[in-house]
Length: 351
Image (cartoon, rainbow, N blue to C red; front, side):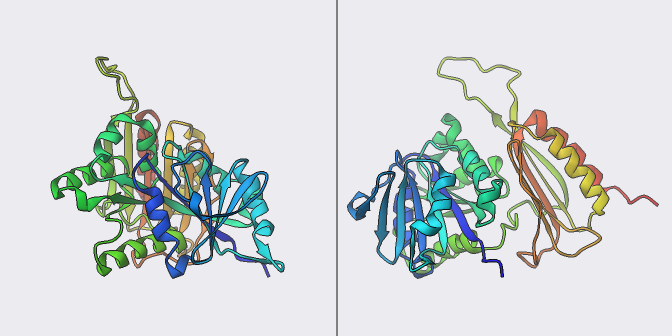
């Protein structure tokens, strides 16, 4: 019998957005007691007081509640492959899931591709999703100024808007609108740390549980309107102070597609072949959950930049909504082509 793969979730967010504060609260929850926490050695991580053991290449930490933590100094692939025996006792693995915290300036794409498109890792680990923290008060300015922050939001499955108790409702609403233009599919939740009451606590950790332990993200935040929607976002490069932006700067664009009709498998295959041909570093992310005429189970298809991930047939739909959904984010030069190609999925079948 094949052993179940270990779920892996990425926690990212710009400098000072509250990643470590969230992580410390996260791993204290009983459901996350047997977690392996991997952090970047240059990150803003306040866990030094918890160190209990050292080795030549890693710092190993046992957190309250039974979580393990290691500060990565080498290759992520090697760290994860070694972890199954390194963090074992009596031949039994001592963790049930992995949470990876990045530095505040990290680009999530290489980590996602390492986890989702690496054959040795894919045999043992299952990529789950990205949780991104955004500072409620500083987030909008940060997104406009720093490309790293924009990429962290673009790859998110769940965006946690931190320090919501320190920021007015109007500012939070404006930030949500800014994030939505950059990632229409991400779930968003304003939070305070610690949560202000039990209701807020349950809401936060239910959202984290859904991303960390769910079978797949259902793209349930995509606009419910059936059909194709295209949104222009912002220039890829924000000009420096006093610099005039170039008129031909390639804009960021997202498109979402929702259909209540199943797609013929041959049409889906032709569309997917076209998408793979045109996928390059200008495509930040594409994610599709599609129902075909031949089978009721959804097909999960993903691309991160130029890396095409293997198509997965899920055992069942993540939610009662069985409509097909596609979301893509990237530069207009590639996303516009993919959006136009997606229209072919809706055309009438050949007679």
